[in-house]
Length: 114
Length: 113
Image (cartoon, rainbow over all chains, first blue to last red; front, side, top):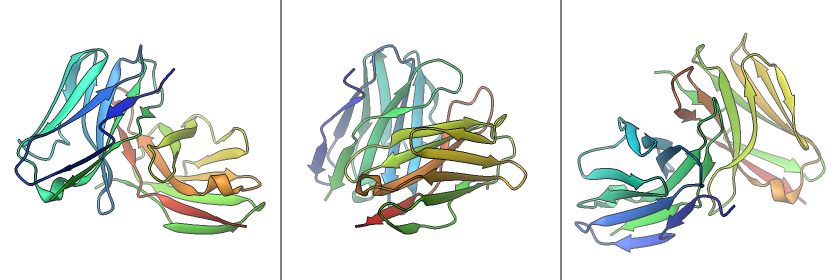
């Protein structure tokens, strides 16, 4: 199994630009999570999906952030417009539907907004 | 608010010695705990988990201990190796019907040769 795949691995953009991060979960996993990691705030959950449906988006910082999961093998996290304070490492994780199964993380996307 | 926190932000250990990483949690409803390891430039990697109906669980060179009385979790690494250098996070799940994990701040472990 290839594990969770994220792209791009690094993204540098200018303030005000739209940024789209992509994630392919592990095949057969029903849950998909988006996290943001910074030195100041640690690892924060932004949103998670179950069977492609958003379940909890309470961690999404503001309306500039949006996430979609059009099918079981693909999800996007979009920031529009981006701001320097959005600079962070964004992780996608997936897990199967078994009770208390652990989450498996992708390698992350390091986003820098200038 | 309730959170998962770590007692020590950094730990330096001699190669071959045993490491102990501690974690405090405050939510008495938490019933599932996971330890993750994060190496530089990589995503968190699952190490071991434990459910609240257990107080000890062993894996390969790792042992997790859970003390529900004092809400304390620890990860013990036997015969620490250079490859164990990483940031270690504990995470808790707050209870049934909640698939979210709450992560602690992390402990940086550095192995001295």
